[in-house]
Amino acid sequence: MPLVSVIMPVHDAVATVGAAIRSVQEQSHTDWELLITDDASTDGSWDLVQRLAEEDSRIKPARAEVSGGAARARNAAIDRAAGSYVAFLDADDQWLPRKLARQLAFAADTAAPLTFTAYYKVAADFEGEAGQFAPNDRVVHAPPQLDYRAMLRQNHIGCLTAMYDVGALGLRRMPDLRKRQDYGLWLSILREGGSAHGLDEPLALYREARPGSLSGGSRLRLVRYNWQLYREIEGLSLPRSVWALGQVTINSTLKRRV
Image 1 (tube, helix red, strand yellow):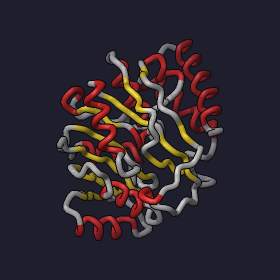
Image 2: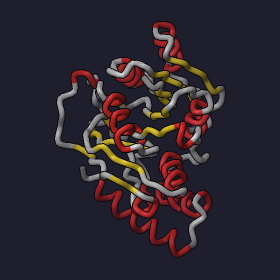
Image 3: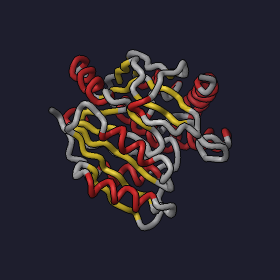
C-alpha cells in the first residue's frame, strides 16, 4: 500500500482537532503518516496533539514557536513528508472513512498527478464525528477534469480533498501567502500542463467559517489575496488578472450558496 503523508496545520483548534485526527485514524487505508504543525497555539491544542501522538506513532507533531500562518505551517509539514502521496486536512475538517482508499484507487485509474473529490459542507458548530455522519444535501461537487484556465476562473479544489503524487511532481510547497496559498499550489501544478481529475463522490466534511473568522469575514480582504496571487505569484498581466478576479468573485459567490 502506498504511504500517504497527511498535512495538518493547527492553530487554536482544541475544540475540533481531536475529531479531525480521529477521522484520519479511522481510514480504511491504514498506511499513512499524519504530519501536524502546531502554529504556536495558545488554547491547549498542542498538548492534545502530543497526547494523541503518544498513542499512535503514525501521528508526527512539530511546533512553531512563533505563529507564521497556514502556508508556513503546511510547508513545514510538507518538508517532513516521506509518502508517495501528499494529502491535506485542516484541523477543523474531517474525512469520511473511505476517503484515502477511494482516492488512491481513482488516482491509479486516471494516472493523474493531482486529484480531488466532492465534499459535504457542515455548520460551524458541527460536533459530530465523520464515522457517524449522516449525508446531507449540501454537496460541493467535483468537476471531472480541470486545466489551468478553468482553475483561474474558480478554485474548484477543496484543500481538504486534494492529493498529489510525489513521484510525478516531487514535493511541492505552497506559496507564502496568508490566504489562498492552497489555490496557489494547484495553479502552480496546472501551469506546467496537464490537468487535475475530480472524483465526484463526497468524501470529506468541510466546516463553515465561524462568524468573524478571516475565511468568513471581509470579502474585500479575500479579493486582495486573490489579486496578490494572480499578479505576484502567477505573474499574470493586468488585463488577465482583472478577468480572472471577476470570474473567481462571481463563481465563489455562487459556490457559497450551497
